[in-house]
Length: 347
Image (cartoon, rainbow, N blue to C red):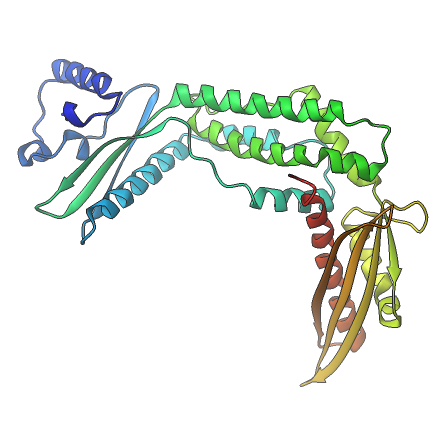
């Protein structure tokens, strides 16, 4: 039975539920009961609309550390239990929240960089219900509890708040500004959309029907606007030395594959680069080392990002093939640099 003196604010409800179970099912023999352990150590609570997890950890020296490990294990156990309830068809709900037309590779790169910087939030209303230490066997136990309905409600509200932030920002950024200016103003929306995606994944887990929150038309339009602005972005490549001119074709292809439009006049971004190529033949292999200084500037000539990148291409066929691979890799790295320059507009 639950130890009332150590129960949390939900202890009374849990005790009441357990008493009802005892009346309807009759007493059950329990080795935990006979040894003084709480009943939940062996008989995990079961209540509609709630989910529980029990975890344990050996106590070596630090009892507090062992209890923390037991709590972590209980959380993992509870989340794994929730994941079992999400079928393949229902998990499609998560994918539906991500679809807004065809995002180019540069958009995906920007969003991946943003997502990697957002920590995974704790589940709302997840509580450590009770701890117990078996001093004889030196094992710590923890019971965690989640009210699924309350957690689902809180997550839906947080998602609704993010949706409002995105659509309000889109309304405030005029659509008659230059493409780059619009993107700079709208970049925080990509952060909120990434946060929304993580919260939706949690919601699908905890919701009683494993359903998320679909994007409404206003939110979909705001996200599509950002994708379209990236698609319209004009980039100019400016080679600063002879080696840079030799790699221009390869860099142009890599940037085009990212979804960027290359042009010479009226560009939103200017990429000035110098390059050095070092070619080595060793053991029947052709190795090309490429490195370059890259400056990314806006239309007014202000430097947005300045980095030095290196790449290597290896081929068993020819030096030309090795050079092609090195330049392709350099172009891909350059795409990451461009993406990072946009991420820097946030905050």
